[in-house]
Length: 268
Image (cartoon, rainbow, N blue to C red):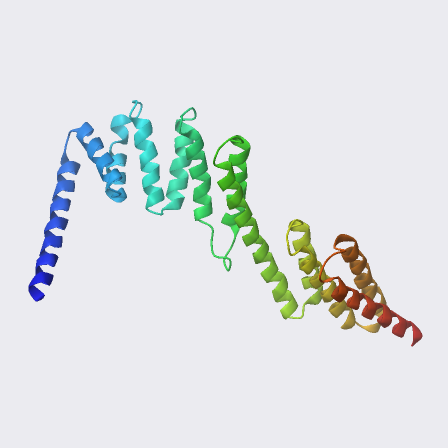
């Protein structure tokens, strides 16, 4: 058993050193066409780091020739496949600037946009790249309305918008949890305004109404009538917008409570 382990380890080491030796010979070669051929071979074998190093060494040799476009194209993909998305983004952008009339321009434009999506952070973190991703994907759709990639681009935009919506919802829920009811109510209203097509629109409206009610209830007596009136106004807007909502009955309860509170205050 130990012999087999030693044999496999030795075989792997021989393969590794042989590969390194082969790469070293390619790197030292003065034959540019040979280097390019080997770079393409490494690329096809998914050895992107080695391929990328060779491609970039060959830039001065092939710049301005008919081989430069393919070289640049594959070099950009090397960064993408290595998950170095910021570099890939820059290289795809550079490709479009150097080869604006390329037959690959639509594909590369999409890949450039896709790199932004790949850099989107987890929901707990800053979502600047999420907003950027929406922008560049929309720009791609506007530039290539007939592209077969429009469907995927649209799906990515939808995913990003859902992520931004969830981020805003977390902030609103946190205000609510901390008892900052006015800030929570405004945040839920902003959510509804920012995402009017959201399936959760009626829930956001209900939460906003509920927080306005809590805010009014905790206010000093002099301020309460005005703030309970705000709840009533919010309920009327809720009923107009979402007459079939499953949350309508609960919203109506806050409306009734507010009406009763106003009556109590006026009768004191």
